[in-house]
Figure: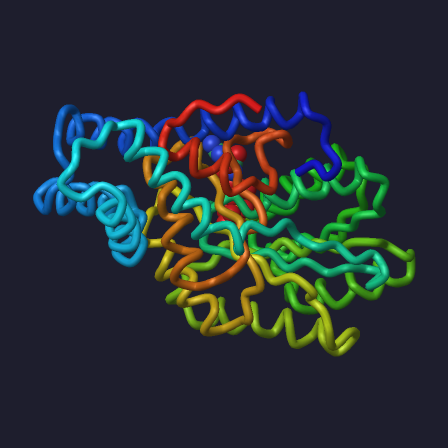
Length: 317
Ligand SMILES: Nc1nc2c(ncn2[C@@H]2O[C@H](COP(=O)(O)OP(=O)(O)OP(=O)(O)O)[C@@H](O)[C@H]2O)c(=O)[nH]1
Ligand SMILES: [Mg+2]
């Protein structure tokens, strides 16, 4: 997640994003190719296009808005595959543009506290490791809190990322109350003048009440030290789950005031369109997308690059 990146970094990232989204773009692009080869834009093709967009996880509202736009441009006329794709990409970009926002770090909060939550295995710890490495390389003092105290392996995993990023990891023996660890971690981060504290939490199924209560408690306890913290409350979502991501957002925003999303595993998913329907439905910022397991694979993204990649349109900047 590089801020102030060079143009070679940018083109490298664009190819990672394009490759990452290739499963999604193959599915969507191929269906559009099949539909619009030498066809007029009429009611029948418009309905079929809407179905393709819905099954590509773009959601009903987005699909309907997109097809309305195409209809208004070219109804009853021949339309090429490239025109369809370019129009869709431009409209998708417009839809997501207000929500593509990197995390706005303010080191004057000393520390800026980021709480990361989500269901099991979505990529929380990996995402934290990547963020920590990025911020640390930018010269910021980063601390991590291993508040997934259930599994020894979870603590070790965060410690490995912490070593790589050269940042301090607050941890405890397994079984300790995660809220009390979060409290101690924030106190110590303040004492050492850290710029950023990122709190890892255990994966929790959104229907497990006691685990959701625990998350609420972590926030409550942190607020005793700083009522504005955690400054970011990020929900990590796995793009391979498609529409299920919607119910995860609903469940988490019921419990905590989610301030932004990070969508991981776009590289393993043919459901990358879900990002569009998520922004449209919840209006939450999407801070970054993950397209692989290494640190270079997580970055804030440009709405045009994302939309073009999703449609399989080649652009070279
Ligand atoms: N392909 C791919 N794999 C990813 C991405 N992000 C994370 N992973 C992998 O997903 C797996 C789970 O990642 P974790 O970071 O352990 O997930 P977690 O949410 O912390 O899991 P729990 O703590 O068990 O809930 C690991 O194998 C990661 O390497 C991504 O963007 N793309
Ligand atoms: Mg984890």
